[in-house]
Length: 480
Image 1 (cartoon, rainbow, N blue to C red):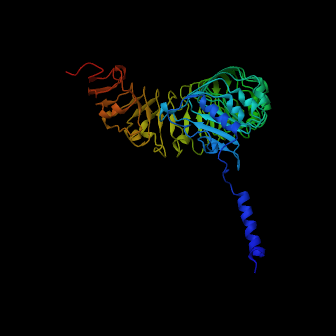
Image 2: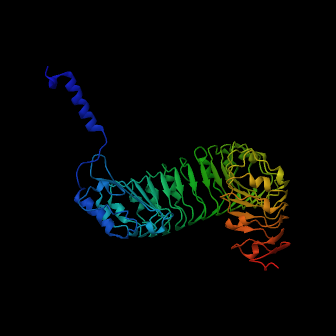
Image 3: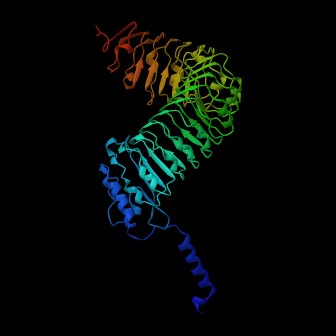
């Protein structure tokens, strides 16, 4: 039988063709297109310093699809994406220095440019992006770029994501940005942008994530598309009330972060309809009146921060299944006790109730789970008793603040876990000696208690120890 004409041969040949055609594989050509290689090498020539050798394998005549950070289109030598990332936390000297060369405009099929944490990459917004007909994703995060965002930014009409987080961009947000109707993500955090937001920003109907935190934007908050899942405007200069237009976001919004602005008025009742809300941050504003009773409907909320406002009693009973972080500090609440819905949360890691009118014995603070606590701040209340059991049962505790209370216990019995860094017990009735373990803390204040004995060798200021019964040694007077 002739195998080449048999059904088995036909099936085998068909299978081979199928596998060859549809199995992902790198192109076997040795080099890129000359123009694209020149574009990449032009970028490399704009780098003054590469101490970690990130671009060492960018060698002329080799397969550029194998160069660090270069990704090519499937079964092609045409460059599709460029992704370069520094690691400044691990080694600050390992990051690139230089500029972004306009020679990258030769990468005609580039759809994504990702430059992360290259702290010494400087220069203006890379205008060569306007010459790339397929550019869809631009992430230029935590670099040293500066200047203004181009007025014609709206011409990058295919953009799905634009992130300029952590640079030094200035000026206003161009109104043409509202022409980027394909945009799903807009992230401009931690720059020096100013002025008001474009009123037509709600034209960005595909936008589901916008973060403008840490700028100097001002004026009132405009309307946004109802598809938004995350609205982050903290640390700006926004003023006025929370607008009624925000109510249209109720069905989808999971993150509403408006902290550290100059917003005022009452917290609107419609926020209680945001059933998908995970995080609500209204801290450091001038909100007044009561917290709406409708907040009882926020059953899925994990992070709630209403601190440093002008809010008053009564605080509503929440029906949350498990809060992760809660901060009600520095309002005009008189909670009396720590709410039961806080005590029953099995996942809480941060509890901050400073100056909340709490009057109780700390031994009656019996959360269902203390293991995961990172931060506890009960400062400025009328809490009495012994905090040893609470603090010593929190293995991951980083900070405990309980100044201006009536706590009374032997400081020497306090156990500091490996992560413990911050302790403030000032203005209490704590007694005993200061344990040697305090030297591992970053911040300490045990002033105005009843402590005695020699202070362990430390680097804290005298203000951390003054006002005790008989402490001595540096930074106070020498022991006799």
